[in-house]
Length: 146
Figure 1: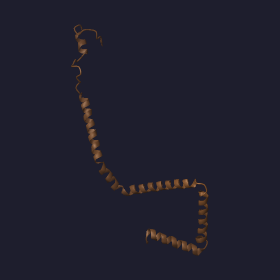
Figure 2 (figure 1 turned 180 degrees about the vertical axis):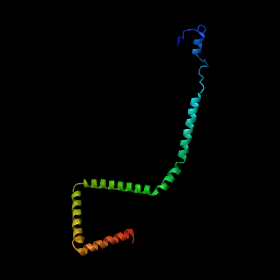
Figure 3 (figure 1 turned 180 degrees about the horizontal axis):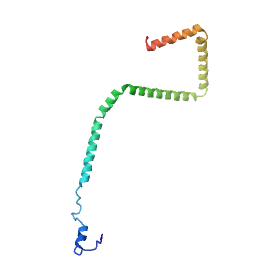
Figure 4 (figure 1 turned 90 degrees about the vertical axis):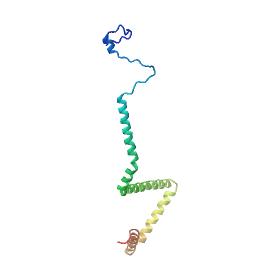
């Protein structure tokens, strides 16, 4: 291809003029929008309309999902709540355990209570029966009669 731009149009051959298709227009004018950009604009509008439709129906989707899976969602939320409560409790106990003389005091209190419980409820058979009655009474109060 001959790309000699120094030639004048009068001296160019007809095939050279056919190859060089220049359109001279007013300076500052914009080229017309091609159909491919119009098609992409239409595609963009369709995608935007679909997204807006989905977002406008989102409360209905969430409500239906919650109604359908209400018990499992509540169970998972309660499980997460229990795990968070255990984590916070462990952090508080760890913080208290860091205070000097508190940890040994708690250990002595726990050891003393364990010894009292063994002496009070576990040494004699009659005391063990009393413990079983107390536990069954507590279960009936919590869970109701069978």
